[in-house]
Amino acid sequence: MAKVNQFTPDDHNIVTAAVSRAEKSTDGEIVTIVTGESDHYGDVAWAISGLVALTALLVISLFPEIYLHIIDWLAGGWSGMSALPYWALFIFAALKFFGTRLILIWKPLLFILIPPPIKKARVRKRAISLFRVSTDHRTVGRTGILLYLSMREHRAEIVADEAIVAKVEPVIWGDAMIAMIDLVRSGTPGEGMAEAVRQMGVVLSEHFPKTNQNPNELPDRLIEL
Image (tube, rainbow, N blue to C red; front, side, top):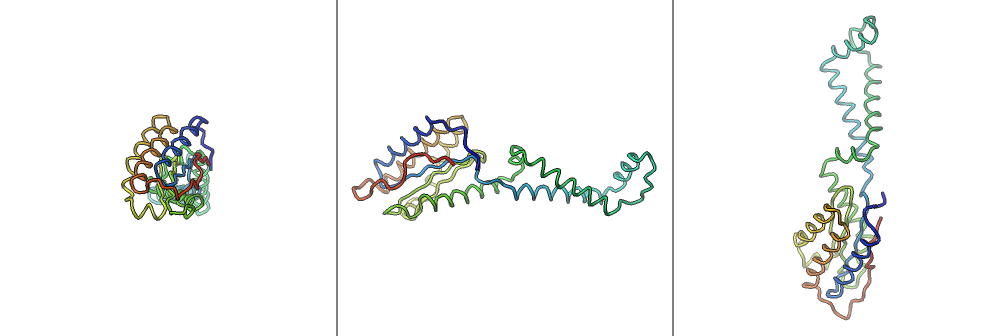
């Protein structure tokens, strides 16, 4: 995954400090992870390329005379073709397919074309995967929670351990997510994650107030992938 270049050392310090403060009033364990993008979307790029090639073939089948005229013009009026040969169709489709795939190497364009539901699903999948590795069942009381931010998709996810899920409805985290996204959009991603952590800490302290039986089991530092 691409390295995140919007996060400075100060941003790291701000988020780490926010996690430490939030966990002083709760047995909940907050893990923060930020990444440049949640997926390379290579399969989506190939799918778009295939769709472009198929669409081109459909257009040719509907309006063959246009392409025959172009070929005749290029041949100086000596093409002698009354129908497009199969080899010409194959070459044309191949050029469209591989040409589109080459263009989509440029990630800004690819990300414009990726449907939002696919981005959402990939970010969610990546967040769950990282949660299982970094947080799931790694605390005594099953009170770990992951705040995950994917910069290129402009999306974030909160994934919680079973004890938290049993007491806190997912919609409760909505305000924290909105606050973070607004600040990230304004160019202060560190402050955004810190504010989300603060609001998460308030919720966790209500349901899992601090006790002496739950040590700090997960890292407070912001993890950058």
